[in-house]
Image (cartoon, rainbow, N blue to C red):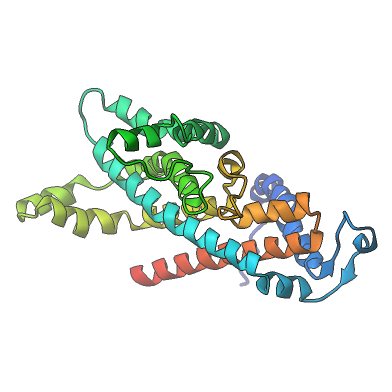
Length: 295
């Protein structure tokens, strides 16, 4: 006797239909369009290049043979290496500090999380006051300690990118703290009780129990931190505008310049494709590595 064919229930498809339409219109279609446009040369601010001309891999070759674009890639890597690890570590340390049942702990949780509530432009404006050459908090503190040092943080090519990194770390650490705090509060207490009975000290408990149990949380935070490091450029507009001498220009800021300042549709589309490939490769690699560790 043949098994009866299961009836298809339409409700799940109806529920995911709005999300599927949104993803198709605002994610899949723009990516496919960017891939297509990246094979054409088109400049809207130059009359003879307004019509798209097929150049194959020409836009990609132009980008990766341009010393300026290579410098932008280096700035982006420096920005990622400066923001992602330190933001995650600080977020974890903040979570350890506020994961206590003491009076007034809610105030400290709010204080650590408060920078995340501020828009990035507002946060950058606040820090612009700290970086002010004459009376900024940083330089005032350095002078009080007897060190004159570099006065203009955002105007110094050697310090501009560091200034941008500091603001990003301050802004994002409290956000990652919330995820770690949720993970810490959901860890099984009996494991820690057993470790205490076995004589494990605080460091051993942290390294051998807390870290492994928070692996999934760390993976999730690392992915969103990596993606955020690519898509956050608001503070660069306020603090440095990519300067001086383009020393703080990162990939997304360069994309904005190519598309809206230089109106180079082909180059901006190629940068978009590079974006997607990097983020996709990083995300997939992290999930594969995590699954292998747990296997």
